[in-house]
Length: 259
Image 1 (cartoon, rainbow, N blue to C red):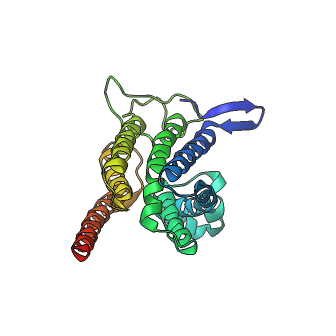
Image 2: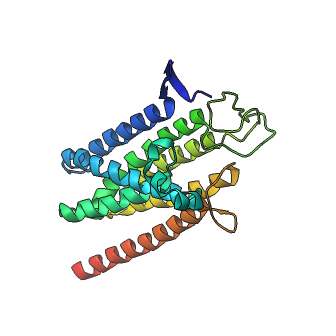
Image 3: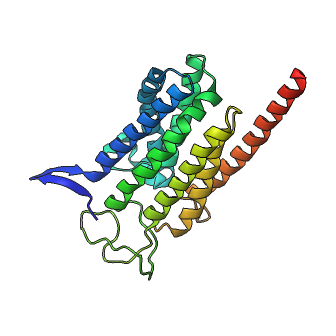
C-alpha cells in the first residue's frame, strides 16, 4: 500500500498521521453540527475535543502497552511514554475518551447522556474514515486468504508481512462502521430518550469489532488466545443491553409518575 505520503531525504510524512488527523476533524465537524441541531453550544464540542484528544492518546497507549507485549514494557518502562515510536489501540482511545467525557460533563454540569448522544455520530464516522489509515499503513492486517478480493502488501515500509495475500480486514471494518454510522444516524431521529443514540453506537461498535476480529491477522490477545477486541466487543454489547433496559425502565417510571 502507501504508508509514506511524502519522502524528502530522511524526512517522511506518513499517511497514517495525516488520515487520522483528518478523521479527527471530520468527527469534530459532525459533532459540532449535531450539537447545534440539538440546541447545545458547538463551542463546548470544540473545547471538549482538546481534552478528549489527550485522554484518548493516554488510553490508546495504555491499551497497547497492556495487550501487546507487557513484559517488554516492564523491562523497559521508559518506552511506555514513547508513543511516537508507534503503538496505540483504538479501544483504549475510546475508553480514555469516555472517561474524559464523564469528567467534562461533571465539570460543566452537562447531561452525560445528552452529550454522548451528540458525539456518537461523529465518533463512529471518524472511526470509519480512520480505518483507511490502517489499510495504507498495513499495521492492522488480515489473515492469509486465497480469495479473489485478497490484498497483498509489497511496500517494505508497510508494517504487514509482505507478499502474502490477505483478507482486507480493514475494508471489512470500514464497511461495518459505516453501517453502524447509518444506524446511529437514523436512531437520532427516531428515539427521543437521552442515551439511546449513544447506546446504539456502543452496541453497533461492539458487534462490529467482535465480528471483524475473526479475520484479523495480528490481534492483541486478552487470555487463552482470545482477541482482546472480542472481549471488549462482548462487554460493550452487554453494557449497551443493560443501558437500553435501564433507560427504558427510567422512561417508564417517568411516564407513570407524570400520570
